Length: 455
Image (cartoon, rainbow, N blue to C red; front, side):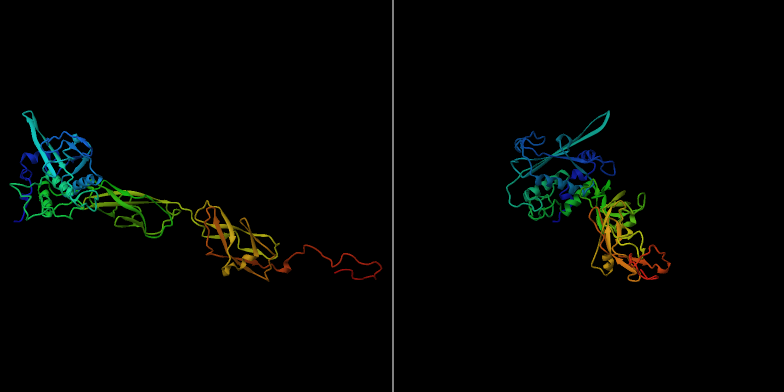
């Protein structure tokens, strides 16, 4: 026999006219189209006496025990899985007074788990009906072998109990007139309502295809809600990073915690710099290496699309961090000087070529390049380039030099550029005399008239 929806779904919930469905859907804020209010659940995580609302001392110990972190997380994750399958939405609360269903861990006398519910309506001829719906779930930590890989302190059979009892709460069932949970023809892989446990399938909370079909028949298919925000892992990045570097990771704020999202650029307010980036999955990449001095911020507009096709877009601004740039080269105030100037003369002022305008620099010669051949003819005094010896055009008419500029942060140019200095040829006939010199400044007495005394 093939199981069908009516074998595992509460008929009082399949039939939308039944009081149970009307009470539950009223709590969930059904507006004729969708459910507008979240179903609240409470996880009791304290050890101590409990006065259960729906179970007395003949059924279980009137006491509760704290849960392990894995047990608690598995309960939360189970509600999240269901939330993602059906149109109902769920929210954890931290007071039983606020919840529709309370979950406890205790000592149960007959079974590994229990679910009980009560519902109804109150009305008078003066008022519309007011509905109530209350449930309690009990689970017991049976000593069975096997823990879950993803929840290493949670026993595998207890995980099945959690899924089974929460499924009861949202409308699945078993026992006459429904399926016999002990029927050996079926296992928990056919429906989580079976008692015939098939191990190895609950490392994450899940339901069989029949369970999902039944739940969606009762409550409708999840249509999802769009994201409410797009988040950047970082809204700033350093300048000078490589082309196509990842500058941020994208995520979405969404009331559906298990929903997935894809991202794309869209036109609209704040889309100025969309073309400067690409999106690879959830990674935002910049196409070309950014330069703070050229552009210090970018504006983009991104759309998040969830697995149900709901969209949300948002304008985002990213800032470029100004990182100290190494000087790229050097320049001189002039590249020519006259021959015959005095040794030690200043022939030029040296400047560092640097994108950081406020940087200061020191200068040294770089040897090892062919173009460094002229370095030895000069000295550097601060930012002044001085020639060691009197230059002579006829002897050497030009010099190539390579200078390293180093900024105050210790970053230096690499010697990729050289500069050529040219000596100006001064025509000697055009030079005016500046002094008269004699070969000797003394001579003897009694020498003949017209004797040469000096040249």
